[in-house]
Length: 632
Picture 1 (cartoon, rainbow, N blue to C red):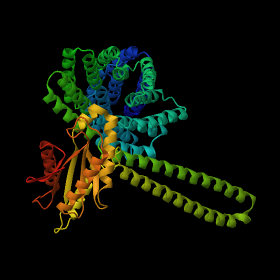
Picture 2: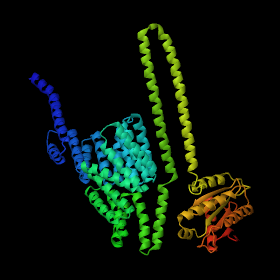
Picture 3: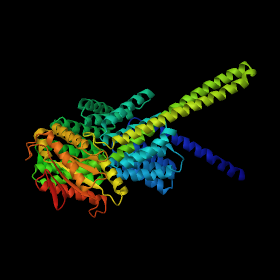
């Protein structure tokens, strides 16, 4: 009896092993099926099997969700992924739970629910963080960055890309290193750095082809990004070419949820061509595809594009309804980027429908959000990130060169050992000297590259403080300098600030065109810069507005300086028919810290108030305080 029981117990592991092998074989056969509907039937039948372990049951549930996604039914795939998640939690399967959360995140992202995607990805990340520098953790950081970029949260996107990139550079495959550059190129597009995006994407395509692997899906995505970058930079022919190449691939592979986004891009491309009929047609198709696959972000953008097309064709009623729908969706899902474009169009729409005050408010909101979106600090952060990538490439090349030299030296060592024992000692001496030389060379080259990067960064910082049109210092430089002077000014001295504005400049642009307006701005800027003291600085404060920070001036000498500037600008005799003075003129307000001012902000506000007072009292004057004004 004891022998029979022992034999039975010994057979249990072998039976379990046989069952596991049987399940793996069946599961693998289903996974290789190209007929998704047949695969769905077989997976559903497999789920009904009572012999499945909880782990096997979870694997089948996730396979069902992935199969639904492959058929383009993202909403169903999301629901099935959530079912898999609940099952894994119920049976305390931590790894399966992490995988299910990752699926929920992916399908939420495809739907356009980026906040839900981030939440699911971060829950999955908690599991993989326990594994030192896990590639799966890097993939999650990369996915989180994509979701943040979709929300317009560029700083958070870049932070997660940097973490992912650090792991990929050390432990990832060549494909991983290329894929993250593809995703970062999308960030460049959203920041309107189209030339950088195009250069990056062309390099990405070249590297995919050089690897000689099956990366067609990534290549199609890269072409989709490239089409967007070309479209927004004005090269509509190349944009259309890459869009159709990408669309052909995704239609062929039945990944039609990507097609919705491409149709949306085509509608925008035709809006830029002023072909509003085609733009409407593609926007309608894009809405249909995105609704079918529950892609909320694409559906929202297509709705906005359709509103634009109908508005251009004169159908203001339908355009208004769709604009309202797009705004509500963008607010609901937190699409900051799309919401900003809606603000811009809303201003135009409200103005044309006789509501200028609301139109003005919408336009101000758009400008504010656009400034935040294209902030110099984020672009500097992105530039630093690229500098790190460049240094990593240089270090990798140097290491590769060093290892190659070392292998060659080892071959020489083996050959000498075989030939004669006599030369062993001399060889080791030679090898030691050679290695020291290589180390010194590497150190010099690394130092050289480091110095080059530091110089490049200094130049980038310097460029970020200069206004591209006038070559004056820009608003960012103004903020830094004014705060610095405020902090360091001696009690016995005073900080003087002057704000000036070209009179009737909008009328000038309207009468003479923006090219002439830019030329006038440059001439005024150069004149102002040429007639201040060496210690004083002139800034382009914004638009047609300028600022001067006077160092070690009293109020009377600052007025004399501005009087000289005003006379020189008058000598320019820049014709301005829209001005009562017939030529370009300036209005200005000046104030000093000794006027019971407690902060930099108060100083700026007082100067701005006096500039406004100058504008209100006939222009072409300098207001120095509320009781005094200088007329020219």
